[in-house]
Length: 63
Image 1 (cartoon, rainbow, N blue to C red):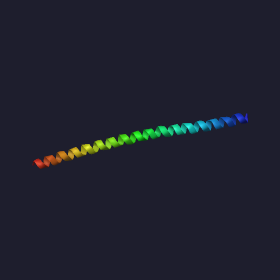
Image 2: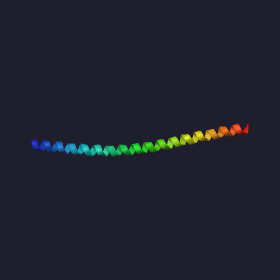
Image 3: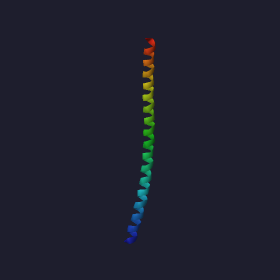
Image 4: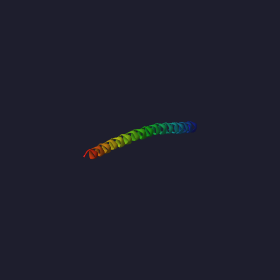
């Protein structure tokens, strides 16, 4: 009976380690994706701001 419990503990410990490793990799992939999406959003915002500044500068020069 003790051997069976010890084997069960070892098995559960191994499974926990595998699951933790898998979750780590899944979360790392999600974080990388979020970083990419943030970079794209920041680029889009900068582009929008730059185009607005150019438009205002053009309006000023036309006066």
